[in-house]
Length: 316
Image 1 (cartoon, rainbow, N blue to C red):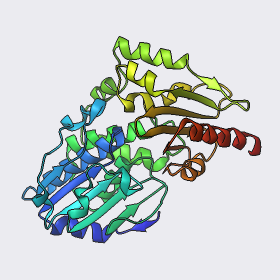
Image 2: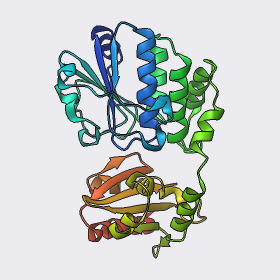
Image 3: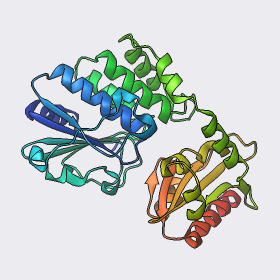
């Protein structure tokens, strides 16, 4: 736990009549779950307030609470509270207009980098931002509507790897139980998360065939910009969506997915046992101890990162 503005945060929520909820760009299930879940909580507990959700397209997670973002003018930020969810650095925020708000609050569970909002609640022990939001709602004594619980549970499921990652703790299951008490149906969540059409299954199979190993057993996939243009898939689908095609390889403890874009090479780093966050930070990124990301300028720099990951296998 790095910051504990619990009382000041709820005081701000109660004080401001307009609240705008942001999350990181190219949202995953946790970003969408925490954003939509918090929206439903605030609307249910403070019906007189104006609550907005903003950001880029929800993509495959548009099923979370409908996933429709509000289009608001700059004037809405005047005298408003902006809440930022699930990001460790300002460049990750979808919609930079949060800086125009009168007060800003960040709720996050990533490795702490720096303070960039007025108020902060950062708990790196939480398995997900959604789980942290759910815990705060309970601690603040607010009501948890069923639709909010469903969204927050979605975030918990996705960021914990269906409760398999070692960030999962007893508190994780306590929070999940608290959400289940609202009576939502989890079957719809799993159907949306873990059912794919045939074309996506074929795409994933093609990426399995692209897997390579370094000398010391680091798994990696490299997708060029030319290859990206030939694929009928989003950058998020390839970069974040394909990284865990390497997760179940016996003997591979660390892996990385490189995806070329017009702006640089996206690097998604994962490990079962090692602190890949240190490598991500070295290259200007960040995230969690065993799941981090970065963006580098070129293939050459990406290969240097791969060498660092390979060297880490020797030093372990």
